[in-house]
Length: 397
Image (cartoon, rainbow, N blue to C red):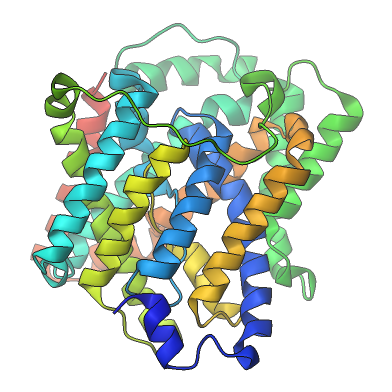
């Protein structure tokens, strides 16, 4: 049963439920804005691609997913994979791979294999997400520190060494904006009353106002790097398909599908624990598959269930697909009326947001606790998964 059907039968679409879901959707929409842009930039695509993805995926999964409270969109777990696909196949290749992944997800759903994916061992998931988190953190150093143009380095470890050597040449205005953004992200959630407002949006707005006022020429912004964000809705466009492209992208498409399935179902399980509801794994994968087919047709990228945004939705009182749809409408309104102001958003503030995302993904405290207290087999699998992923990325071009 689709989420919207289940909500209708359970009274989740009644007028009495609208107020709390409107508020939840508004808050999640505001939270999703900086995250969607940051994830898109880190994936090697334009910031608007992240917003388009959040809109399309948010609507598709809210209507046709298997959880009434799941919020979908671009996430941090995809960054390393998507950036690699963009480098090797271009943005159009990423769109084709994402659509193929969507088809794979729907096939997994039809074959009722969603429940199988849920039983992937916890140490494997933790090791994978921790490795991705560390990689995201390192990948944001150029934006955070404002390095001068670095020489091209084909491998990850060479890039790290080049960035370490460039640390003394960091751009001071960029570094100040990045540190201020990071401090706000860390402090604001601890201040009573203010902690009810999304700290990423506050940090982004403060950094944007500073750059707008002082106009630092050395600070990279969305305007200087991408020419701003187009004002208006995304246009429908079908990528140019060919058998050669399809066959060459089978591997990346399968990886996107598996990663999206794991994270979506993990997010849905977390949502069940917070909301008291119970999702349907196979229907959830159907909704995610539909989202990944539709998003690239409107300039988007791969999407999955977003744990942080889903949790925010539940904490704000969201209990039906209305909240997810409202979150998408909020992003549409931002595109229509506030897009011109995005030219002043510093990439340093986006990097600070991703620093925090990377730390949360790595879940350092739980990682260390599992190594210390878990059975040796579990701890070994955790460490092995982490280092295998990291070494694989280390040697990738």
